[in-house]
Amino acid sequence: MQLQYLDFDISEDADGSVVFDAMATVAAERLPALHGEIAALLGWAHAQFPDARAPLDEGGEWDYLLEGAQEVRIPLALHYDPQAAHISSTAGAPGPARHTVQLSLAGTAAFAEALREAFELG
Image 1 (tube, rainbow, N blue to C red):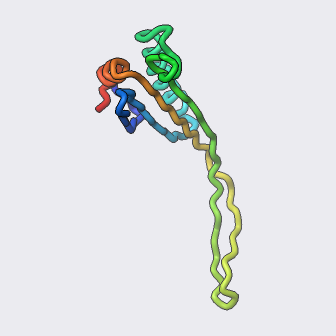
Image 2: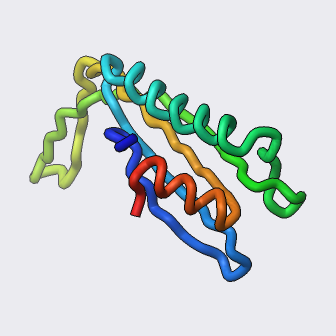
Image 3: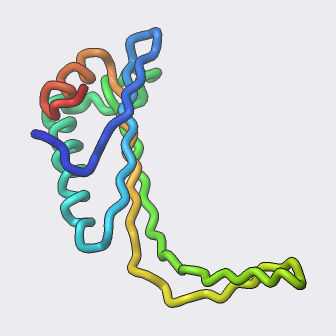
């Protein structure tokens, strides 16, 4: 499966552990697709490595952290007054919400190899 929203930064530890970190920010109408992609990835991990999710330092083969935030952008109209050497601002109307999701996956070398192959990760 090729991922459309998650673009992972991959780092490897000297002990063979691999960490995949991704952050995606989407408009509300794309949030279900992003959630679907994350659910597919985590579903694959649970199916391929059942009962193996636990912190790696406690003997697990893989683990994850999933966090999210909703942000509303409020533009500011800025004005510089050269006589007063002062900047003033006026808030505009809020824009549409954006949703940011962060996913970190950590795994053993075997988990990382299988994940890379299943999701075409570099």
